[in-house]
Image (tube, rainbow, N blue to C red; front, side, top):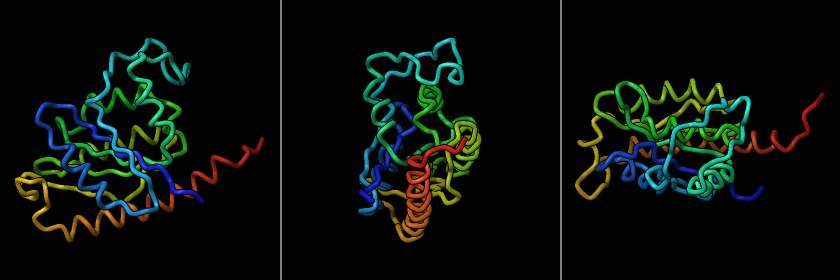
Length: 193
């Protein structure tokens, strides 16, 4: 089997956000089982959704500047969402990106890396599990969490104590790899009628 494609999605688009630091750290943890594509949602305009729900029109006409995002999401075999908690949930830009893309998530594996003050992004992750379940994606159980991330990384964006987060990332990647291989094989099999 060829190397699997992993899209790491930075879910926050706020000015001064910490997501790129966390995403770059996670990308460094990925081994040669995956080719990595870091997708920063701040690079794509995410306008209001069309009136027709995705269940009725799963591949809507998208704005031209969204084509790159759509193509990169479609090309991925698996995803890792890097997200903070915003008001006990996940960022609006991430929700918009998810909702604009219905079929791209179907039967693919998804992992999570969270960061925030007290919860370490776990509140956002729990909400995202519900959303991706509805989209027929498989969210893996393991995750990486950075509670009080601002104390865990130094001024240069390096973890002060990388051992525990590194072990969590390795466990997440092992699960993600297993599920991604299984789902790639399953998507290539004909559907029984």
